Image (tube, rainbow, N blue to C red; front, top):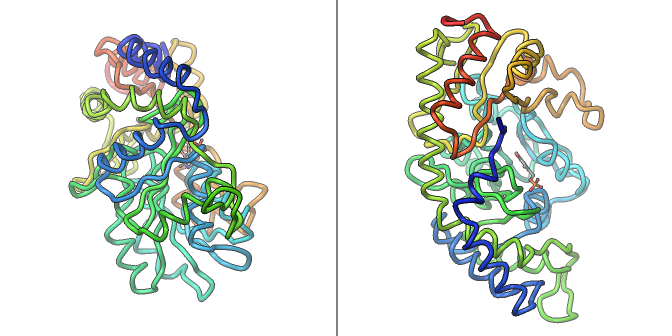
Length: 377
Ligand SMILES: *Cc1c(COP(=O)(O)O)cnc(C)c1O
C-alpha cells in the first residue's frame, strides 16, 4: 500500500505527460519556456485572480512574497507553530522574527481570536497556513489584518484546489503561495511552486524577484533570486491540470468516506474533543482537498508501529511545533501555544490520494481500529 500513489495517476495521464515533455525537448526553451506562461494563465483562471507567478518551489514562493513586501531585519511576521518548517524558516531567513499564534483545536489552523494579541508595532505581515488542505479562517484573519494595515500571505502549500466560502485557496488574501512538490494535491515531477495576487505592482515585483531582480535583460533594480519555475515542471503541471478538478472532487469524497467508516467504528469528531480517536473536522465554510487525512489518537507512536506492522503506511505532520524546534526555540512553547503542543503529540496521517479504492480504505480503517481499540477490531 502506498501513502500517496503517484503511479496510479501516471497511468491515467501518461500520454499527455509524455506529449507535453516531448514538446519541451523539441523547442528546447528549458528556462522560462512557453509552458510557464501558459500554466500561469490557467492557474490564475483556476484560482480566480489576476496574476500567477510561477516559482521554483513553495519555499521560494514564500520567500519571494515576503521580499516583494520588503520584509526584512527587525520585522515580525505572525504565523502558526503547527506547520512545515519552511513557513517559519523563510521568515527567519530574511532576518525577520516569526511570531507564533496558537491554532484552533478543531481545524488546526491559526486561531483568529488569538491573532490581535500577537501584533506589535514591528509586525509587517500575517502568514496563516491552510493546513492539511483546509483553508484557515481567512475572512476573520483579513479583518484583523485590515485593522492593523498588514498584508496577509496565505501559505497554501497544502490547500491548492481547496475552497473557502466558495472562493479558491490562494485567492483569499494579498498574496497566496503554493507548492507543487510531488506529494501536494497538485504535484509536479520535481520542485515547483507559485505566488498568486490581484495586485499589479506586487505581481511585477514577484516576476522580478524570481529572476535575479531583473526588470529587463541585465538590468537589476532590486535584489532577487533564481526562483524560476522550470519549463519541464510547467509542462507536467499542464498535463495534470486537466484532471485536477476531478481529483479535487475525489479527494473530498474519499476524505468523507474515511470519516464515515471511522465514525461507524466509534471514532469521534473533533467537535466533541477528548475521544480516543478523532477524525478531521472540515468547517462548513470549507471544501478540503485533504492534502493529508489526519487523525488524533492517543499513544500515537504505538499506533504508527501497529499500522506499519499491518502493512499500512502512516506519517506525522508534524511531530514538533516550530517554536519547539532548536532553531526557533523562543521560550516555553507548551505554555505559549498549548493547543499546537498537544496536537503535535497526537496527530497521525493515513494514506491519502485521489486513487484510493474502497477496499484499501476499509483495510486502513480496520488497521486503525485494531491499533486503537475501536469497534470491530
Ligand atoms: C510543502 C510545504 C511548504 C514548502 O513547499 P516546497 O515546495 O516543498 O518548498 C511550505 N509550507 C507548507 C505548509 C508546506 O506543506
